[in-house]
Amino acid sequence: MAKPKVYVTRPLPGNALNELKKYCDVEMQEEDRVATREEIKEGIKGKDALLCLLTDKVDAELLDINKNIKIVANYAVGFDNIDIPAATQRKVLITNTPGVLTETVADLAMGLMVAAARRVVEADKFTRECKYDGWGPSMFLGQDVYGKTLGIVGLGRIGKAVAVRAEKGFGMKILYNDPRQDLEFEKEFNAKFVDIETLLKQSDFISIHVPLLPQTKHMFSEKQFGMMKRSAILINTSRGAIVDQTALGKALKDKTIYAAALDVYEDEPKCPVELIPLPNVIIVPHIASASIETRAKMADLAVQSILDFFNKKTPQNVVNKELLTNG
Image 1: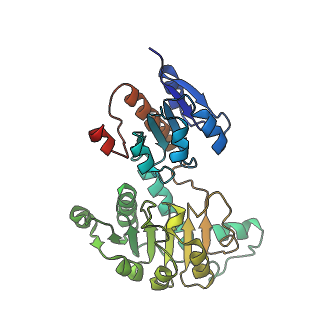
Image 2: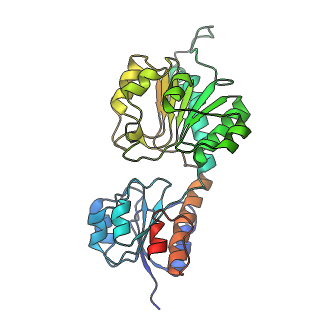
């Protein structure tokens, strides 16, 4: 029996691809860079499966190049790079890699929170430029984190993991907004379920953990920044387009809010030019899940989804679950 044929858009950390090669014929874009659209179009021809990254756009046009593609394993939690309705219509199963990166992303969210509050990046740059000539009582004054109010927007796995760190480690008061109220979470963390307007007005820190959907695009814009405290700090480790970047730049420049720290931004990897000159924003290049252990586990999950599928098992993390019941 012929082995399934798989196209992989980029080398991945860990040993997962070697495991995939034991059971499948694997073709891969071998360089450690984003695959071009043309490379992916050519690569999927004659393949049964695609293992792609969040930087790879998978839409109707791409899927129609090869109508024999049966599964797309997305090496990411988010799947806004994939046209899910188009895939479902073509009976292409879509999987993602949630769970294994929860703690790693939450670690970075808390790290960004502390760094922004205490102006760590500004102070590092100052020191590297040899400007430090002695301790002063007003030098690089920032804000405390301990005991402050954290507003969590989106109480999924990562939002909850951030709450654990914030409440248990930093004694923070937790407000949250989510489509569903979680009474058990509220009891455990002394948290309060509030509407988004209340969260914006009362939070000292706001951490975003919602997926990018039509209704969440530019969820944070001029109106929302105007509701926030002038001392508020915004953290985004979700998706860049949830925040209106132009409005954020203006809010930071005008000191409508105190600071922001972003793992993601609009139009990645295009440089966010309106934010670069601002000292009160930290910008890192989408590294929230970037630990050696986590990135390898993500590869394991993506590969296992493909292996399970071709072994007639249900993959663990199916996005378009309706295909499982509707055939």
